[in-house]
Length: 278
Picture (cartoon, rainbow, N blue to C red):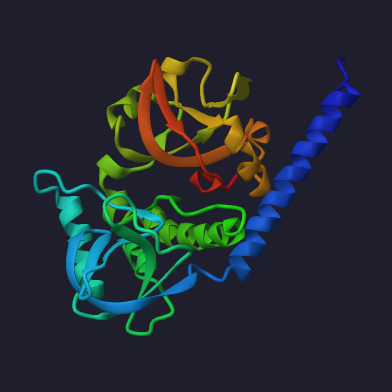
């Protein structure tokens, strides 16, 4: 009989402790999360909706809803049209209050923010996610000053998305937007260039040079690989996600799919990784 070495026992204990702490932190944050309300950016009346997450105020400001992703409107995409219609129903012609960590516009002149309609305490993002008309994108500011609030907000968004995902309503009932199996590389490859949500058990975590590789299979061509640049690792650790401790865990990863010998998603921020239930 082979007995575990002290090093193996220590690593196993550390992994168990990390798992327990992470699950406890997620549960605690879910109960106490302040939601997605940041600094006030003012208000205005929504006069036009350009897609399922973008709209214009009467004062000319273009707003992009933070934290969510919606189908792209290409050739009359039915899912994209449904998301746009849902947003129009929620805020078109109504008074909107904006909150965000920054009012700096992106290169297209859009301000990324959370939108609250007619004095509601619930951002319209929650409604879109709960109705299955959007998916959590995890694309929010996560600098040292705002990481804790951003993580709490992500937990709230995940909670709203979960309702729709588990009942398969809206996008989740469409095979084109369903959660992909991380060990099914051939099924993920066609998603190249598209935002996708992928779930599976991490087989191994390796690093080479400046990159950490989170592998869902033994071969790149057969399963998804998640890459994390080592310079971004501190933000993952600060969020309770030590990449090397993901080995053997079932996680849900979201982001844009690339193909480099096999399908790849680059994780640049910890909000992209969600620890799935056992």
